[in-house]
Image: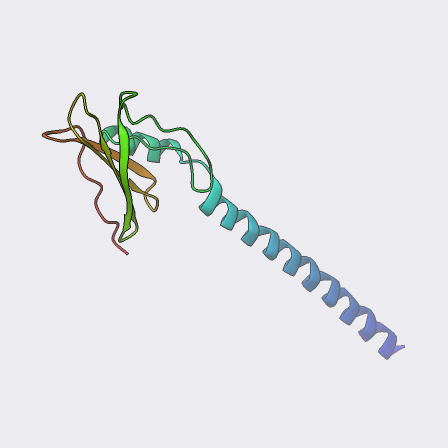
Length: 126
């Protein structure tokens, strides 16, 4: 009888530990999804507005981004440097445009030659 009682205790511990492992895996999956694929929160969006830098859709999302270029503008080059995506566009009817996208901070800055419209994206401290 003593062995039967201890086996029931061991079975109960195995079931409880299994449920805890499944709950931990679900929590980790949710947190990874939230960190990598969720849209920016209201505070992050407000921070982007305060810096006059538009915050676009979350990482992994596809969203149209208007650069404010005329239909005659042509993209001259796209460069990736130190984690930033830099796009140079030339418009024969006006000045050149430089778009800098920082995927870590999810921010886009567009600068027109001679007239900066926003502060440059700073490298995030890690």
